[in-house]
View 1 (cartoon, rainbow, N blue to C red):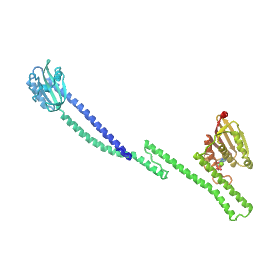
View 2 (view 1 turned 135 degrees about the vertical axis):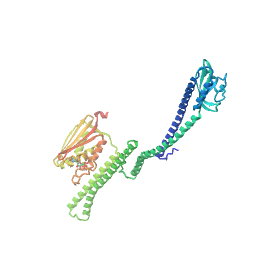
View 3 (view 1 turned 30 degrees about the vertical axis):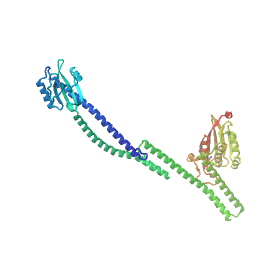
Length: 471
Ligand code: ATP
Ligand code: MG
C-alpha cells in the first residue's frame, strides 16, 4: 500500500482518510458504548422510580384486588410492563402471566427484597423469552414480604434505538467525508503546488536557466524551502554572471595588447617601417605588450590558484622590517626614474608567520601602484609598528589618489579608476584583488584610504608571533 513511488498527495490522502475513518469508528463505538450505558442506567432508574411510586399506594396487609387493578391500569397506560406478584408462598396469582415466583426472583434477590431494597436487573429472561431491563421493588408488611412489583422493558427497543443512531451516524459520516474530501482536495493542491513549482524550478536550473524566482506565499517549511531555493538560485545566477563578466574582462584585456602586437608585427613584415630606428621602437612596443600579456597571464593564474585554494603556503617566521628593507631595495631604479622619495620607518620587532613569496607579492603590488600613480617628485613612505599581537604596515603616497566613488571598488577584479586604457599606466586592475586575497590568506586585513589629488594610504594589519617563538 505504502509505495515509494506514490506521490506525496496520495500519501497525504491515504494518511488523512485513514485518520478520519479511524476517528469516526472510534467515536462511533465510544458513543454507542456510552449511550447504551447511560440510557440503560436511566431506564433502570426510571423503572425503579415508577415501581416505587406504585408501591407507595400499597398500605400493607394483604395485596388487594383493587391495588392489582390499579397496577394493571397503569401497565396499560405505560410503555414499560408492570405487574404485581403476590407472595407465592401463599398466592400464585399474577398479572399478566402465570409466573413462577421462584424462577423470577432468585433466593439472593429475595433476601435483598426482604431487607427492603429495590433490585435492578438486566439480561435474558427465560420467562419472557427476551432480553430485558427490569426493576423489582418489595411490597412489605412489617417484616413480611407480601409481594413484589416487577416492571421491565424489552432491550430490543434500546437496540432499535442504537440501530437508528448508527444509521444517522452513517449518513453524517458520509456527508462529513464528502465535505472533507472536497476541502482536502483544495487544501492538498495548495500544499503540493509550491513543491511542484520548486521541482520545476530545479529542472530549469539543471538546464542552465538560473534567473528564477519562486513566489513565496507561506511561511511554513515549504515557504522557507522556496526562500532558500530562491537564495540558492540567486547566488548561482550571480556566480554565473560573475564568471561571464570575468571571461569578458579577460578577453577584453587580451585583445588590446594582442592587436598592438599584430599591428606592429604586420607593419614590420610588410616593410612599411623602413627606418632602423623606427623598427627598434616598434620592436620595443611589441616587447612591452608581450610583457603586459605575460603579467596578465601570471595574475590570472595566481587568482585561479587562490580561488581554488590549491596553493600551499609556506609558514615561515619572517622578520618583517628586514624583509621590507630587502624588497624596497629592488625598487631603487624605478624610484630614481620617477624622482620619487622613499621614507621608511620600520619597527624591527614584528615577526610574522607567512609565505615569503606571497608577502613579497603583496608589497610589490602596492608599491607598484604607489610608484605608478604618483607623479614625478612625489613621496612614498612606509611605516611599520607592532601593536599587541599584530603589526600594522602603512604605505602612503602623495600620488593622484582615488576618487571617493571608486574607492569601495578598487579591490574588485579588473577594476580601474581610469577606465580608458592608458598605455602608460594602465594595469589590468587585478593587482589589488590579488593583494586582498593574499592578505586574507595570511589572516590579516587591508584598508585603503585615499583623497583624490592628494594621496593614498594603504593599511595592512597582520598577526605576529612572539619573539620566543623559536623555543
Ligand atoms: P595591475 O595592478 O593589475 O597592474 P592596476 O594597478 O590598474 O593593474 P590595481 O592595482 O588593482 O590595478 O588597482 C586598481 C585601481 O586602483 C588602479 O587602476 C588605480 O586606478 C587605483 N589605484 C590603486 N592604487 C592606487 C594609488 N596608490 N594611487 C592612486 N590610485 C590607485
Ligand atoms: Mg596595480
